Image 1 (cartoon, one colour):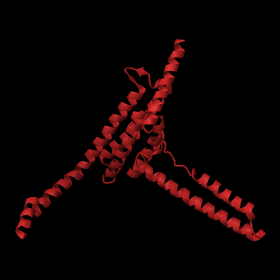
Image 2 (cartoon, rainbow, N blue to C red):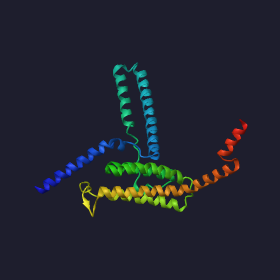
Image 3 (cartoon, helix red, strand yellow):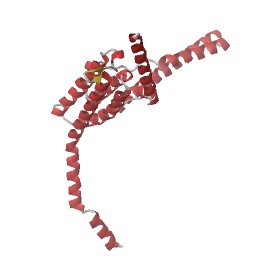
Image 4 (cartoon, rainbow, N blue to C red):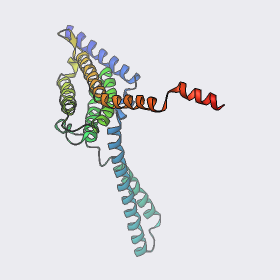
Length: 252
């Protein structure tokens, strides 16, 4: 009886968590892109699907025209067959080709843009299995990775920060999520050594998110310093607001 009560309580807990997740926009979260990198990959896939669909429609119309010429018209049945063929093509090419989800070992390959896009797509694929607080951090990571990718484009590939980023993005973040997913689903809400697996995942991703932000800021320091130097030079060269106001007053 005790085991039955435990299972019932666990089922109710899982149901409440799922309901809360849906109230927080879970469905939208699963469908939306977490960053520009993954969104661009999906957009390219949709453009490719549209091109294939257009070619399919063109081929169907050519085939219908040839058959109509041979048999002197395709008639109502032929028109319906053409419409059905176009509908089938629309359904097929709304799903294919599919967006390729990269494997974990592929995350750090390629240039910064490709690395960011791959990581975002991989994180999106893991997101439905994550608790709501952790999924929210994954969304924030998408925005952070976009900014980090822009920074990496201006940094030498052999810079120590680049190696640190590839380790952080390609190892620590996916390893944390993989370790969580190895825990059976019905055990993720149970306390172990003071915390549940859900809590540990959320805490770990929060720390990794902070680390990504720290690295991005550190890599941006050079650009910020250059901007500050340029600003001081322009202020020295052309004067500040007070000088402009004095000149305006004298002219008036």
